[in-house]
Length: 314
Ligand code: MN
Ligand code: MN
Image (cartoon, rainbow, N blue to C red; front, side, top):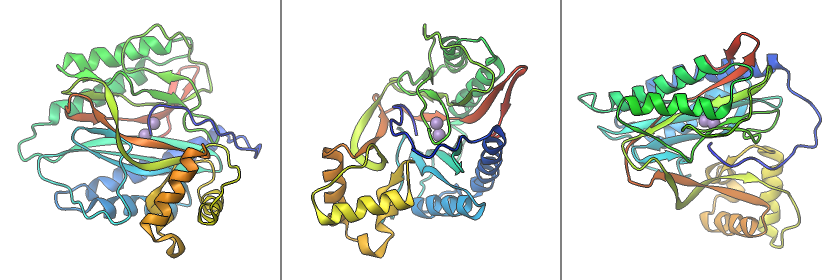
């Protein structure tokens, strides 16, 4: 998940420990590596998302957000629909973004796979990877986030691509995937200085396109704002289901429809619409590069320490 902070604050007072953040990271890292074998031509997107989500649950964790499978010019926030039949196609460039949630601790990691027959996307894949490595190497206590954005931009431009300027890395806190402070993908004057104990997701995006993403109409991922009364009976039941099953973390329409009671696409979309209008939930529209360029992404979660940082998702 990118951009926009999660404004909901959990009333539970448990503050996750750094050990718990490291544990969430280890799980995310194992699943990231295991999941790479699923990213093959002909593989159904729905199977990939559900398999990765099952792997997260099998490790005793929950999803920090629905698995994002963003293909070609789509940068982020796409997760398969409940009845999605699409399969991975030859020559596409595929971003897999997954997050684990463990007692409030969160890990967020992403990678890109080139499904071309001739390695044509290799340089674009490397651009975001190299930017991620350079950013992590440069992050230390006292360093400013805007300078790190400069390191990311430099690496991506060195390969002839553009960084996506309106997607950012983000601070993570207990129960908060987007905790306010951002790491831009371009050089800026943002002067927040990294501090020991800060947790950040670092996530450069490189593109052959405009370097600016725009919202599509399609929305598959939602997050809770502030639960309050909804008018329709079905919406009340779905809100109750969201509160009980997904809590404060983003969820997919697909997840709601897995429950036999909420199988109807029409009923669920009417309820989601009512809750969006009442600002009980917010939507995360699918994001596409404005110039329809191809996009790559690489992401790790780090803890800032005295001597640089620890990559929890390594
Ligand atoms: Mn992230
Ligand atoms: Mn992510």
